[in-house]
Length: 88
Image 1 (spheres, helix red, strand yellow):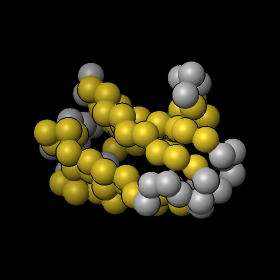
Image 2 (image 1 turned 30 degrees about the horizontal axis):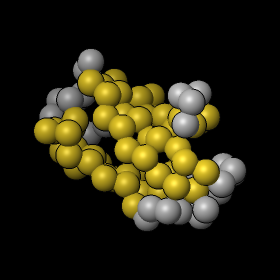
Image 3 (image 1 turned 30 degrees about the vertical axis):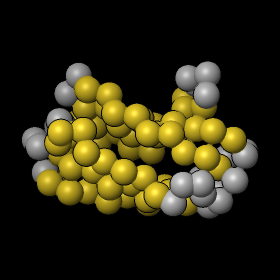
């Protein structure tokens, strides 16, 4: 899956309980979405699956995370896209 032109977003940021991510894929392949902490440890694997070609929207529960800075990482087709978010 190639995230289209690297266009994706997450909101709200900061968040207390959930984050919504929106991203586009240009071809159907396996993708992985993870949350990592500031030192790169994987805290949560959100998905390891195929997504529909085009725009995808996913709601992620972050209520179980401690307050702090985290990164949402989208892996696909030798690409890594990363966005930071703050958990309140």
